[in-house]
Amino acid sequence: MAPNPMKSASSSIGSSSQDILVRETLRISANLASAPLLQTDRIICCEEIDGRRWKYVAETDGCGRFKNNSFRPLSLQSSQLHIPLPLDELMSFVRSYVVPEGFPDSVTPSYVPYMTWRALKHFFGGAMGVFTTQTLLSSVGVSRNRATPGAVAINWILKDGAGRVGKMLFARQGKKFDYDLKQLRFAGDLLMELGAGVELATAAVPHLFLPLACAANVVKNVAAVTSTSTRTPIYKAFAKGENIGDVTAKGECVGNIADLLGTGFSILLAKRNPSLVTTFSLLSCGYILSSYREVKSVVLHTLNYARFSVAVESFLKTGRVPTLQEGNMNENIFSFPWRDRPVVLGSRIKEAFQDPSAYVAVEPLFDKERYMVTYNPLKNKVYAVLKDQAKPDDILKAAFHAHVLLSFIKSSNERKASSFKQREALNSDAMHTIADLEASIADSCKIVAISYGLFKNKAKEQGWTMSESLLNPGRARLCQVDDR
Image (cartoon, rainbow, N blue to C red; front, side):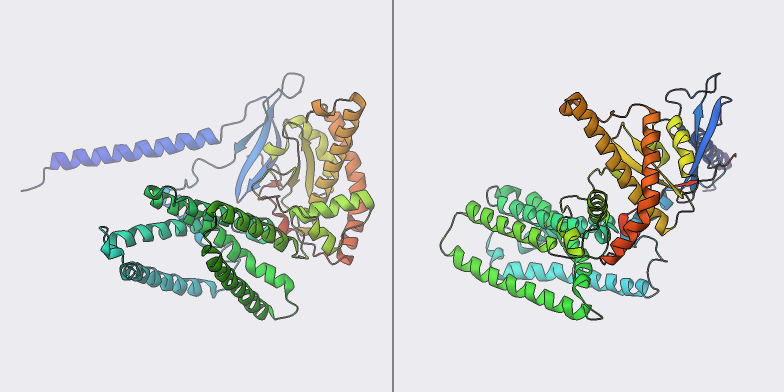
């Protein structure tokens, strides 16, 4: 039957109308994102993150004073620029899980073929695992029950599959395994014990075996990712010269021997039919205590956030930088990277400054620096804003300056609390005026100008490796004002 030309034309017109509607919707959304300046707006600064720019503006009154709550960012992206499609967003999401940050510049050329063949190997291994699991369950007598070996095997595979999904999702933590490896290693061990506890709970509610086993496997696989990702840097800290492979092999051998001895001990203990809850509690306490002492015994030469805080605090109080042993022993293992911290390095402008007056007041103090530091009393945090010309040493100096300012803020709050004899009632608004904030920042600038070089020299004398990368600075950068 011949096609109806009227129907084809109608479909074409309808499709065209839908395309126009979609384009207009995207154009309007883009225009809203980059709203034009008002006549009373004043451009304060400009910010860039991963190639995207924003300018910060504030509305002024007739006397030139800034209006309350008028400090806001405006996108500099043109409405004609490419708007990410769902496929682009999906690919970006996938890349955040399967390739390292900065790929391909952050790895050698051999990384891609290695991971390609590794993925194929695991594909075939996973496929074989289904059949081997089914065969093993059948061999131990599952087939005698009403449930078929295939059904039981599928449940078992689902449990393992859930664990692999958890392992994959947690891998997105990426560089956190490098700069907070002690904290994440201990957190992983805590998760391992939590997973073991959930597995034991299946004995009390066997009808919930599958959901509980899946949850336990997710938690334990997240812990396994943490253990695997932090193992090499820890062994690297022990190796002297090019013997990291030997150190790793021997370390894994010791772990396997201890694991076998623990298995034998548990078999002997199980013959006495001890209380399951009591036994698990005692073994868990021993496991967690051993894990804590394990990570505390590692001596790293690098300065991450926790060790940098220990070093700066000691330097400001005593004038000396702690030794490698002292710095690592005093490091807070419970300072997990997802917790709020009092110092934010490489923050965005809108997080660091609550109003434009604060920015305008402190900006002249950092004309010769490639960063700015400030204190936001509403969030009770010190922020270090990095300029686009900032080099590694500038980032280190910004972190040092931020900790100096934090020390000033704490001292000021303590003095005011003691003078009013109401420390408990003191809140983060101890410094109400911009003038107070400007004075504290100016004083901190004088201290930093004198002491930063001395701090660096003493840190190097103690054997510390000075690098900004483990401080995990944010990607936002303050750039030249764009009048577009």
